Length: 181
Image 1 (spheres, one colour):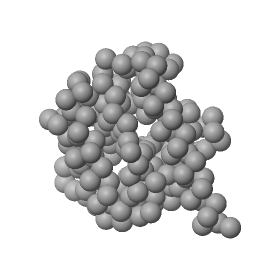
Image 2 (tube, rainbow, N blue to C red):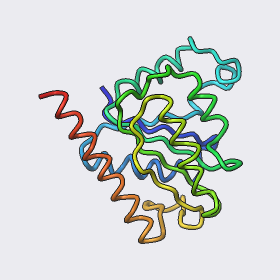
Image 3 (cartoon, rainbow, N blue to C red):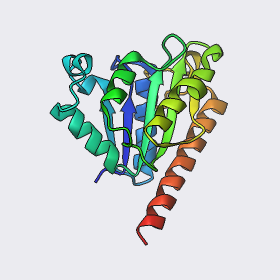
Image 4 (tube, one colour):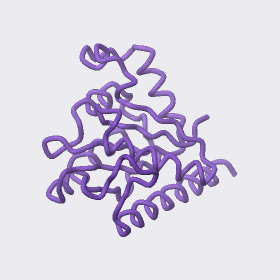
């Protein structure tokens, strides 16, 4: 069983969001979690466009997410919201796929003006899947260098990112230990 599933809503494999999500995965692996990365790019475009709920790639993704002890969902900001391809993917998942699961939302955007996309777009989307969305993380593009091992350049932003990830890991462990005593 996968402990943590990281979902990337970026249509680009080389995006800043993707790089930060990879870094978070490494932090969680260092804390002895098993991490699986899912990307919207893993689902064939025709499956997303035709809303093929029964496609094996959708069923596999839904099973991985449902079995996860914690989920991280990340997306770049597009038009003051998450990516459309992330929404197309989320629309294919069962309505309760995140039920009672801690979820750490992450968004990256070009300016601080898009900060509220986290609160008013991504977190409500995750709550419709019955996930327990945490505070979340928003990073501007200027503090991310996707070519570095530690992609977050700003010390305060990196500290906040690592602190939120540690809190997420603690919550996942606590919730798991309470249900498996």
